[in-house]
Image (spheres, rainbow, N blue to C red):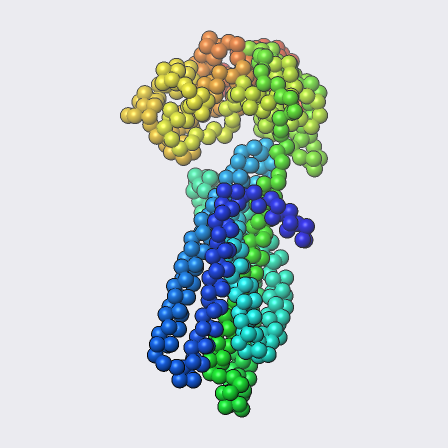
Length: 586
């Protein structure tokens, strides 16, 4: 357990970079504040004793001015400590978010699958917030309370002598109680954060699929599912809060027990000695020190509760920061892709080591540079899995995939992906103008080049109908354009990369057959040297390809031209017949 904590601290410590100074200054001012506050009761006690002995007004004013000065210093040090603490904690949280976000950017699909998107979102938001609060408490309250307890204890010894040892008997009682409470609460928080991930997953899934939910009138079912998940978290938090709630009565018991004992023994000594051995000033000072000591103990208990909750958050953050991408550049990466030729040699692939079945099984496929290759197959036949290996979104389990005659694992990832453009099955546009979205492909593209590429992808014709044309604002996720328009913009964005390999993963499914044909015609005429791989459900989208690959259950069932497959492949012929029989009958 201790080794795990040290590992987490070692991982998160670099995130304080740039905020070391305020992280040090905050505790310094906290210590100065504590020292000043601990002198105030001593000075007050002396003043009371002097008044009791009949001092003049000048001496009272002198002590009064000293008390005002100490109070002002305490306030000043407290304000400065709070300011530096806020700067340090917010900066620490900013650096954690930065490091988390950039770490996630380097993740492969396999790494993201391991954590899940909702879990990563929770770690970037809720968990970072918890750690920020914990850091704030560590550099301020966790410094103030122990030092206040120690200073006040020694000052009370100086003032009240043996009476101060009452605190020595009370403090262990509170400490043992806190240790038991934290031991009970920590496993609950560990469980709760995992349930938070599930809850966020449910919310994200529901919002993303809202159109489906409404079309099937499943709002009630989804609401009930969310309520169950939310109530599950509520029960765990309620259980944790019930245990934590014992912290307050325990602390109050210790506080009031100490105050009663101090008051009793002080009063007894005052009365029995007539104020000779112990004056009213000492009694007043001891009560003040008892309040300082015991309030510090209460705050320490609150700190322990907060730290026990944030410890799991810190661990979850450290898991992401320590995660190594399953895809990395080799020591001496190749940075130039010769051409668009692609070779699959004895490729086997599965998504995880635990998977029992290969998603791709013994794939041998050779594509010449500049060829147009169509890939068809039923849902789940691993068409997308096949093309994901070309741009190295995943690594092969066995065998090799080569682009331009070089194994993709020998390339720099940046160089490979700049030359292999992919229009994924799930098209994504980001909030911003059409120009800004297109320039993801080439940040330096001119307006004229944008228009030329959009004419190539048949996007220019609908862009020109918008009032703001290429300056039209695209809402998040591209919700203000149709599916076909979104696909054509995504194709244009990929073409701006000027790739040696262009992969269209069912990315013309939402456009009509005429537009689909015009896009393919433009590809043949405008980018003849680019290798084009088209995954499609429609035979018409691939029938004029140089090579058509038929996938079935993770294997290549057949390959050849349209005419060859009609003669040799039962699967291809069946799909072709089912798609054309309506037009034949007409």
